[in-house]
Structures are given as structure tokens and as C-alpha cells.
Length: 108
Image 1 (cartoon, one colour):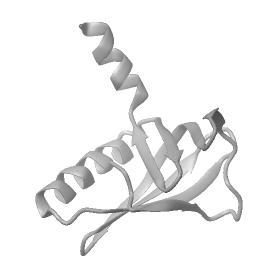
Image 2 (cartoon, one colour):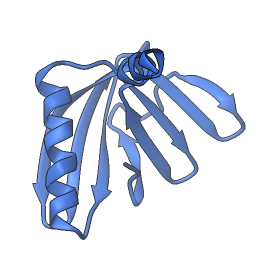
Image 3 (cartoon, helix red, strand yellow):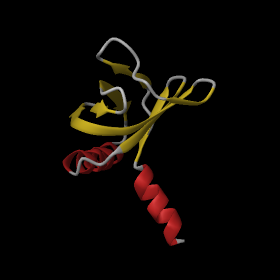
Image 4 (cartoon, one colour):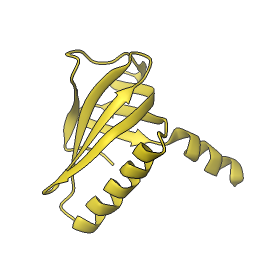
């Protein structure tokens, strides 16, 4: 998932994170606090990382089915307190379950 506008961090500063490359930021151990749907928007409140930051990402999905599926995944991550990795570049931010990706890769 990628938002149509970048995430904003409520503590007034960007959280600490590793820079993988110029313009790419990676923050590990972020968790979903809440998920809200309103119209085409899917709002995701986040917290965690080494800097204990909190913030909101806003995704837009015109397709209702895709929005429902994404919201369901995010709520599962929230309910299970899944540690996620936040990756941002320019105006795009992505959340991923790095542990699940590694586990899937090891099965192959």
C-alpha cells in the first residue's frame, strides 16, 4: 500500500530511522494503533520505532473492495500488535510485515 500523500508525524519531527539511500527512510518496529475508513480514505495511526514516534498515514483507495481488504489487514496487524517496517521515499510510504516476508522466503 502506498499513500497518496505522505504520513505526518504528530510529535513535530520525523522519527529516527535508518536511511537506506538518499531520500529513503526505514523505521522498524512500528505498530498500528488504529485504523479508520472515511469515504475513499483509510487512516492508519502508528506508533513505535527506536524514537517512540507516533503519526498517521492516509491512504486513498477508490475501489471499495480493495479499501476493505487493506483495512482488514491493517486491523489484523493492529489486533496482533504485529511489528511492521515503515518505508518512505519522496511522497510514498509503505508498511510491511518484514518478519512474514522473511518467513515466506525461507519456505521456498
